[in-house]
Image: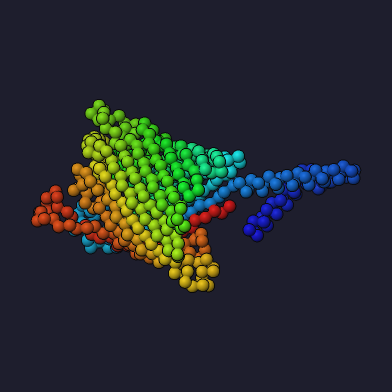
Length: 483
């Protein structure tokens, strides 16, 4: 606050100096070095009062503008060591990769900048620019090995997304709002509360981040508000695209578009309700429903005339923050109609387009149902040390367990047994100040190995003995408003 006041004072002084120069009261000719003729005393006094008033007005407008501007963000930097194979074939031929060496990774999962402004009279603007995994980078190079040709090279992976861009109008002191633009779809805990202070692990909860888009954002209309202990939201959106659904990730990529626009042949609705009646406890229920087939530029033909690809999702989550404990949990269930018909369509298109360069779609089999649930709990050890408690430092020791399956049921379930995953993690979160957290965790992802009932290894029903996947991760995060 002290630094901010000093900056404001200096800026006000700069404004005043600029006003004086424009008024000619302290002007020196840059060419001759001469000063203008002195005005009469009465005129000088009038000019001084006018300059003072002008300066006050400018400072007042500047301070008002600053008070309406909001700048913030969050980010994560992660270092991991994975003690399992990184081969893409490790589930197809697990026996070949059981003794592979460990591998390490450095990552910037999310770095986001939020900018908002209050225009007054209930009108506000919000935006969020997200750099995933450090953002994307390309460069034009002259290739000596290719006769000096100019060639665009991919310098680094990652994505840059405009995750939020909306205008909001408030009515009745926030009891009712209308928001339109690129908005967050708050289905599931990890979409509604995706900032790094809202989960203990170094990465976002795996289950929800796998079966649904994450962070899920689309252009749409939102009606929302808060009445006493209830917060509600209802949204009208464009539908997802089932051609981007996959066996391993279900609907995760369904909100993305390879084009400069999002196709909206189909529409969808999403809703969320949160209750805060019990002190320190929030309980949320959310859902989604919409058609996903034909939401692309390709026409499937009359054979698929009755196929809609209706997708329904329901999610329940809670957060308890009390008695020096933070406990969180979520349960998510999704049902995908016409899964077999769309899988057949995908396979036909894969055969036809597999040699086509630049094809943006996956064309894999898709599960009929997907499931995810997870629970985590952490206790603030520093709450028992008076000196550290007074300085607002926090040290949470936590544990987490989750299960998710992108092929929970469906005709092709037996071909994708590795999509049924379990994971537990435990570690520490240390926050020297409220906005910064250092995280460390040990994670263990594993696959259940049920009895094969005497089946031979070449049987289509034989369940592969997949290798377990332990890892160690360290990260540093920040989250807060700068202005």
